[in-house]
Length: 149
Image 1 (cartoon, rainbow, N blue to C red):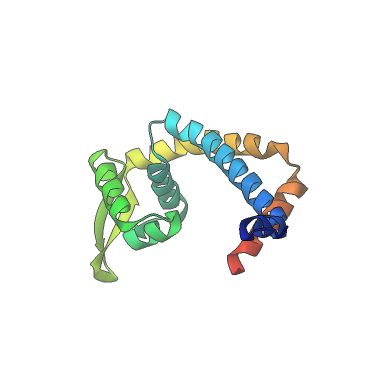
Image 2: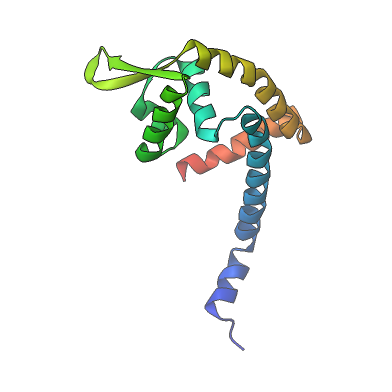
């Protein structure tokens, strides 16, 4: 009896399919755990990402935030509008390109992210403590291989 195309494809790619399932489950677990600290402080993942990016990189153009956070322009527009309303960030004209806007932290935004980051980073350390530091380095190197595929 001939194997049908689906069964053949499953058999031929079983290692890749298994790896994908394990990867997705791990990514979902890590994301869920990462969000615990962020939600505890009343932020969404995107809001936290904006605060963290601005804290670490300084003022950024909206497009830079979209690129860094892998967000859509529509979503980022709403997030920025709400964060300005809530007093976390300010929007100003970019002196280098008057058509563009720069987004920067307000004192409240700066204070908020400095309050969250130590707890967040410790929590991420705890999440990844299931791996040794060498295993964490190996994982990072393995995952980098997907960048060029």
